[in-house]
Image (cartoon, rainbow, N blue to C red; front, side, top):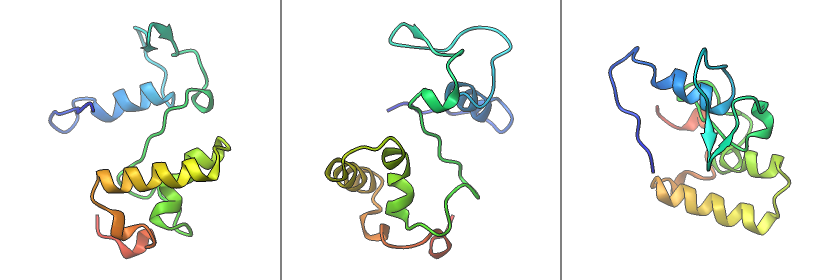
Amino acid sequence: LIALLGPSGCGKTTLLQIIAGFLQPSRGAVSFDGVRIDRTPANRRRIGMVFQNYALFPHLTVAENVAYGLRARKSPGAMVRQRVAEMLARVQMTSFGDRFPRQLSG
């Protein structure tokens, strides 16, 4: 678990966008386990990013939104269900899995 803390405007979101591949760094490199990935396209990095606002699929439930990346990678259904359950439990949202984004507060 990693936490990024800092005041508004200090670059937390920019750093996450660079790691995810949505922005290119002006200098430096992004590496995982010693493998440089900053030249790897975002869709091949196997990194997900969930935005705080307006980035959930409104027609999918909370659980379906959480499962989206795994399903896009064609992960086995049983594994997807298990990981979704684990992640919802981790953030204490198990009881919200069947709700739609419009049914949640910020």
